[in-house]
Image (tube, rainbow, N blue to C red; front, side, top):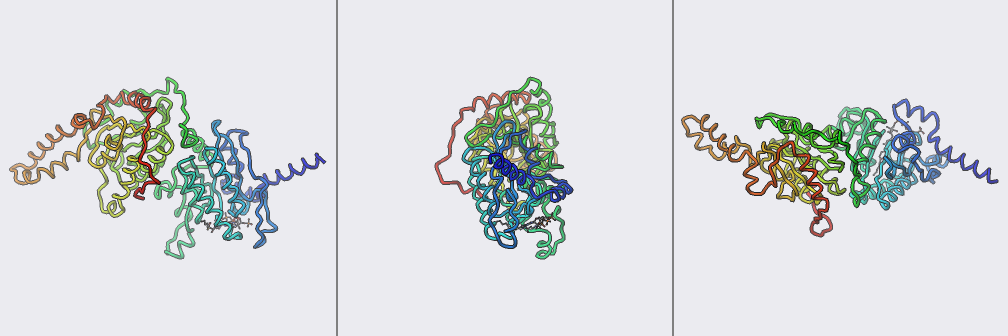
Length: 515
Ligand code: HXC
């Protein structure tokens, strides 16, 4: 009898592992996609996966579903480890009824969300689904609602990561959209509210799945996704890497990594990195690489708003969030996309105790009708709001331009920057020399016998007086002017000084940030 029991159990578990069966798995592989279980094997540490609810079935009966009750109901859930640290996972199985979501499928996801939330570990969801299971109607919609609710409740408590590895359509897109980081795979993943056929019917636009909601569109244009990978294996490796930078929850610190001597960059080249002319670009990525632990900068949202760089890095093993203007793209000006990209990143770091290092070279907010009409005022305010409310350690380095409102936004002393330093090449002023002279000396220049010569002279005078860090230093708006090569040491020291920082905002239900 005992033997029969065991045989039956193994038969059931084996059946659950077959997913949609050989043919459906072969079709999945033909598309360059893997099964839910294959993906989880690559995502998690070897032999660490513990499955939950493998024997769940749906209990729907309409439209012939009574005869179709696959074990597991099209989603594999459970927990495992990444780099030895606990994570919770769900992976939709497209080989089972197209990974469609009915009541039982949703309940499995909801249960694993709740476990992740109450035990305080990240949740990673792999999405590959035709959306709401049409045969289950409202039950499916209720299922999504429960998932969205948990996504929202878990926001800021545990890191939530969505990996799109197939279709993700209709209202289903809103679960990933509510999470912290979205990964997509080139060629095989799409996200859209309505597909190409509906688009054609409503707006008469002809568009393919990929043009409408492929990985390149969502990482480069809409900003819905944060990471793009050439294939599934590369994508899963990126997810593992990201998890290594994140704390398990909002009450813990990100993992500290011991730094080997050979991973300490030599910052000497920083002393000559900023070009003598204020209008000449340079690559802020080089600055980052010469400051942080070698090879540790992991860029987030690389494909959009290249005028601002955001990402995680380590400084003597401590995880920090980097926000840096990139003078090599649009002179580093803050536009709508850059403001929103950076605001979201700053809020993530603040929610999860990750200190922020801000590198500033910004000529101002981007001028233009499109920017004004697109709401640069409201969108830029998001970045101010994010920095102002952030209570984690905030360290700021002004490498060159810090003009006007953009100076204030980029973690200035006045909005609670904890340690603000500037390089000798810094120019901290209301605006650049030419613009300033044009405004305050317009009359004199117009009336002058030699306007060009007078203008050049006034610009040079302005530069001498304001285009330096020393005026700001004299008012205490920066804490120190430092030799660029010393930046890493100053920041590491600053992080140690701030390790016990405690700061809180006035008690409230929540703010009303300008969304
Ligand atoms: C039930 C579904 C399904 C669904 C796919 N299947 N989507 N079953 N409900 N939503 C089933 C198919 O019937 C098929 O079953 C199997 O999954 C594989 O699907 P195929 O169509 O053969 O695969 P493929 O050709 O690769 O096309 C994939 C697809 C297509 C583009 C995703 O299946 C599709 O368009 N599905 C419907 C998408 C959709 O409109 N969903 C509703 C979105 S609205 P068999 O038995 O033949 O293998 C929504 C609302 C959520 O989700 C609201 C939340 C608030």
